[in-house]
Image (cartoon, rainbow, N blue to C red):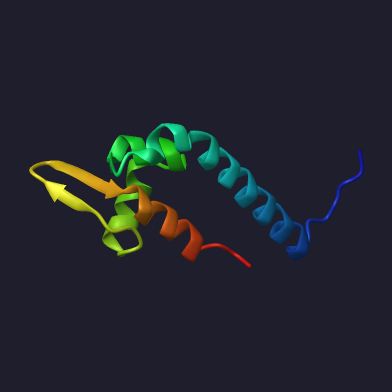
Length: 90
């Protein structure tokens, strides 16, 4: 099998396809998690497919707003969707 060079255009196309697939997955899960107004950290991590550290980085750098009550951190589903839209590549 011959080696193929990956170009920046290939990566941009892959990124767009990946984003479209994520949107489909979110739409499919709309019947469960995203219909809830408030989500806990484990639900957000599962929904986005990210690690606890990545979710913490999103909180710390202000990318994803949150509310902390006691020791529990909650996220509004609308804020998650807004974050995805704002970071969407055109």
